[in-house]
Amino acid sequence: MKSIDEHILRATKEIIVKFIEMGRLSPSNIHESFKDIYAVINETVKENVTKAVPSNEKKD
Image 1 (cartoon, rainbow, N blue to C red):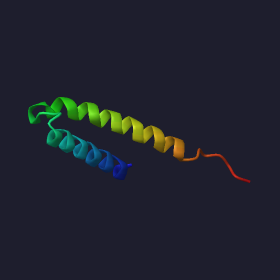
Image 2 (cartoon, rainbow, N blue to C red; image 1 turned 135 degrees about the vertical axis):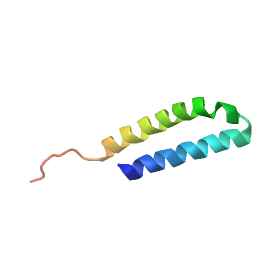
Image 3 (cartoon, one colour; image 1 turned 60 degrees about the horizontal axis):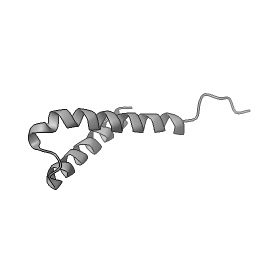
Image 4 (tube, helix red, strand yellow; image 1 turned 120 degrees about the horizontal axis):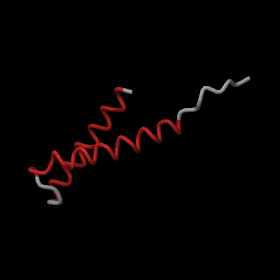
């Protein structure tokens, strides 16, 4: 799970940087936006990872 968390953090950082570059986010508002963006990415990734990983069903 650590690797997934690192990827989520990197993706969040890249989105924040792009928003700043585009002028849609001010560096002074990063602390507010970072939490929201991180939460959305985290929820989306972990929801889809659990769907992609098969359950502990026995295959005979």
